[in-house]
Length: 182
Image (cartoon, rainbow, N blue to C red; front, side):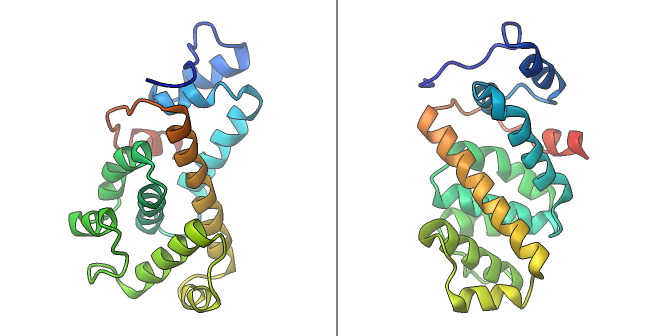
């Protein structure tokens, strides 16, 4: 059971109601985020930008989101993004490797391993080590690294929000949200 109430769009302030009505799915994450009325729209805007405008490829983005979700013990994030990851080319073998915490598995190429190790260090240590940063910089340019960091931070926030507020896990909606923002 959620530790805070979900916002009911029928009783929500007009600005929040308008946003909730435009969302492609009535997910608990959106209804919980709506409690933060002043940050709701900007926060969703950042999520939209990450899912539609980030410069690195969507498969890599989904690997990162899944890795953040697993490291952060964000079950909601994991459940929602496994089917999205699959839709963007993440294999069952890669999902299983991330689930067991093996970002160095043979199913990942050198670029994916570098980014996943970077992600782990940023989540666990706040700062990527010089060696991991240098390896990642072989595969991503400055823009991509900054966008990667923003993506990691965003999904760390999502995991902390869902776990701390006790959001009930919705059934996965697949790419419905991603498709709607394209």
